[in-house]
Image (cartoon, rainbow, N blue to C red):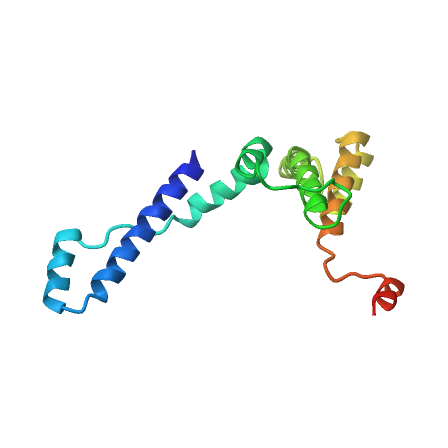
Length: 165
């Protein structure tokens, strides 16, 4: 639903800007003024989509795999072990799957059942205290490892680099 709203707001704003561009560049200025009055009697009223709506769209697309797949149905996504898009898509799936566990940890910290710590230490403390299961702990670490793997864009094995050059 937010994607539809964002799309409509974006399209209306772009149409408005295009019409304003035509009017502003019209060579006969008095006709341009008349056109502005006819086309925009109350002035240019459309604004680009707000950051709030954009954030909701981004969250929906990140967390709703079916919606994302529907929008990208014609895009080839390589296997999860393939570098690039394949690994990125697999890391996204793992990260989205870890959100409920991360939320659980945040709630435990807020409730005072778990001391504040950096993320990787928080997992360890929660597991040791029996607040999360071994499966949840493993899922968090797999998601973190997958994320770290895909963001290592400039990490090359030196021997491989020498072989290429």
